[in-house]
Image (cartoon, rainbow, N blue to C red; front, side):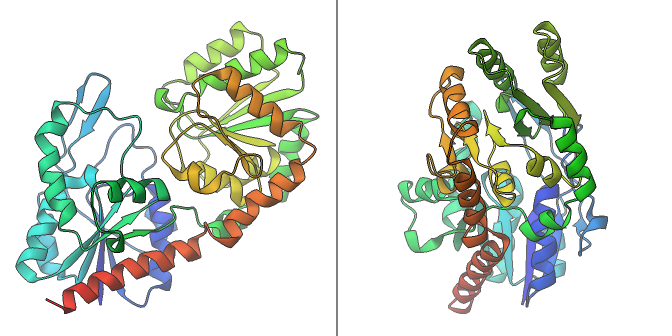
Length: 383
């Protein structure tokens, strides 16, 4: 069968999954990149490092803002034409954010009696309803309810769709994760040795991701300041990532004379696992999710505030880390100290790695995606 995966833009982490899926799939798989590009989209994949060549479309996608929220309207004008030419038996498409392109996908499926899988994060906690939602939500709802299968990235998203009244049998969780095999293969003994020498006797809090306001990277510096005020002088921070908050973070570090305790590594394209391996604890102070899985690949406990829902599946309080259900940095500090100075740290590290090895891994993700595709193909056969 011919399967199309449509992405409005091809992110590096999504290309990693698709590369392995294409390699292992029994189907003919075609990846269609909607072509959206943004000056901020540094996460766009370099597909030369992957096992597939995407069909790249031209994108006409305006981006506008209301208040502090940005709305990219992903639209690839030639998508419908491309689908008619490719003739896929099933389409796996991004969900709500991709609704304009999903109109083209629904038209194709309606005309040619095919089915599509709605791949989604569900509700984003940090997004507030605006006039944009009042205008477009009815269209999104129409398209959502005509998908054969709702494939969610975590349990939080699955619960969201069930609460919307969608049948449970049409909702399947495909654990959103990194390719743990590839991630571990990228480890470099010499790099880890150098990082540990740089670390010295400090206990390192690791932040991996964009340095952007919604991810709240500055909260870690406040946590560090509070820890030092309480006599904990052996804690440091490593930032792996880049973004608009970097200058402000560097200013805070200088202001509080923390240059010896805070290091900015910038954006790291490969071998991020070396930083996870050398650090002691990963902290997700704001929006995030995939980084939790990435940390646990290398057996690192994670402290996270409510993020994209992934934390509910991966973090068990006191076992693999903690979920801090508060905006208070004092509360965040308490859990940081509870892990860093725990007599059970090694057990927590082992439990974190076991989460990946036993259930939240690429093998299980691929099995779940195949299950979604099979159910969609069976629905097509019944037409």
